[in-house]
Image (cartoon, rainbow, N blue to C red; front, side):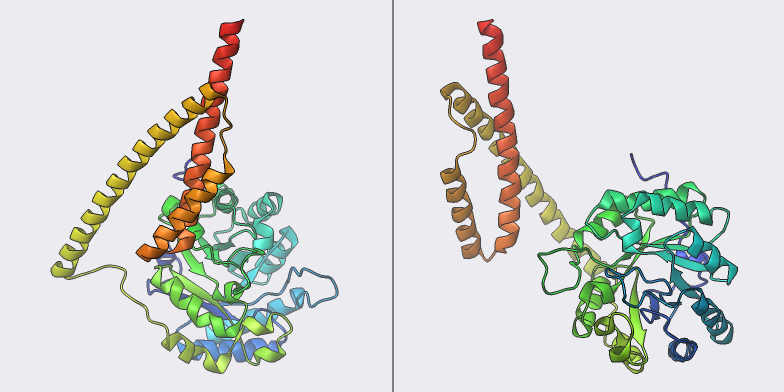
Length: 373
């Protein structure tokens, strides 16, 4: 199914600003009224924040940990919003949360990664919000499943909610030991490709998991032309009741933003545009050559598959695969090409070759059985 049926209203039409990047900031958790008022005052004075965020219901991995202040925190957010004029957004995970937030005047909500992963929960929230013209920010699911993420947007769009924004907070993985959650940038980029009208903000706090990595992730997000940042900010991060390591100090927030470079997304002068177009034409030519060579390789793979089938030889031959990968990686090293890229590419090519040769062998056996019969 395509995504053309998902209607999305851009933030410029409901946030009364078209300035980019969109900056969302606030503590991981609302801990007290004084904390919320302190943060709201500091962030509003910065003049850089479009929306403020705070978790009041915290879905924690283990019980007996701080799970948020719940409904008692909602009046704090409303008071801060009225006093400082910046809207707050909260995470909702079920119908009860939605009702409580709406009753207290919360005008924007987000769906957390632990909720996005469950279509039943997403549908429950969508149903609870139906009839309310409210913006919904949707974080990616915990696991790197693009279709599941798209499905969440479909569920809200289907009930008439079109002020939708994506939030990239990274994916749970055992492989990435640098960041708390693996960025897997190719997934939100693919989401942008499928839903070009969708704006996506990046949550560097949850991707990084460490304060010293926030700048790196934030700059990467801007360099990849994502639409904004959702940053966790706390008056005293080391004393925070949840996720202290990934929050930056309120006093450091403005300087943190000032250190980021917001580059242009397009060339504007004729000379630069012409040069870029010529370079892109070269890329196109090389890509077509790659595809032509790939087609030649596939033809030879098919010929080898037929030869194996007629000779009764197994499709997969470990020694040959080891030889291929070692040779290609060595050649890549000599050419200064990233080894991981080459390994991933040749693994995909080899798997496709195995699949094609297996189909040829099975077809050959089927034809033999038919002939013998």
